[in-house]
Length: 328
Image 1 (cartoon, one colour):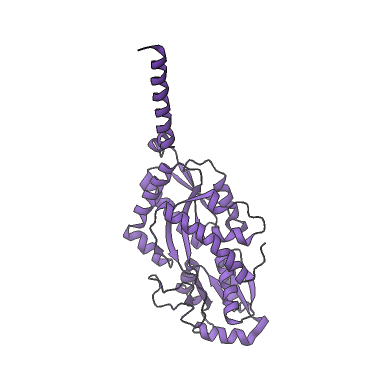
Image 2 (tube, rainbow, N blue to C red):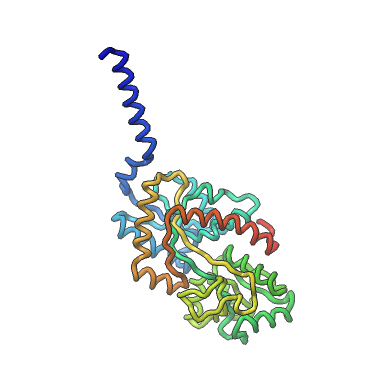
């Protein structure tokens, strides 16, 4: 064999090896994964209902991975601070943002200068649950159902007010007003817990709240839940009617939590995280936990989860326009 032939063979072998590496990017990373501890980024204050959910999954991830999982609360800007921190983190699978994917998608339309484009800079590794938002009133309120509340708020006009503490609650409240003609003033709170006193004193008439806060405060005797925001009733609270059933069509929102990582995270790492989270969701203890907080498990592939993020980001453009919300 002459030198030229040998060179051709070696060049071909090198090209084949390079192609193989390109075909399986991150494979060496995946073989070592996990080789260090995890950081789970939470956009909610420590001790809040959503923080409890985040810490539940963080603890279960610790059991599955065999590594320490540290929860870091990065609160502010309706979740944008935590989302941006995650998107800018090293894309190695060790920084995971557990947050409402619906809110993450919505923020792209709710802010004039959003810090990131969620569907392009974040990758959903797993969806964790589906959950409705609830219309709530104080437990001592005379309104026993949504029809009674709507009739009373129409009479009250611009003196009416409602509480909310996050993106979905805000849009839900505005869509309710569009559908009914209610003129209530939006009173935003940093957390749902911050609104409790104003409910009890009558400073706010009703609220559009996340299920964790709604169920916890209802069980504590502070609030009364009137309806859910989803198209159909949910297994977690099957006796609670939908807003459509109560004469308010067009308000069909559902929240969903997801585990998200930077978009450039190697696919084998994404797949391993998806496997762990899906195993966690399949456990009866997880279903019971999620039902307690008003949600149902939602097991998907990374592709399905990312598709939902893309879909919601587009949908919320329409929600914001329909609700006539001025981006912040």
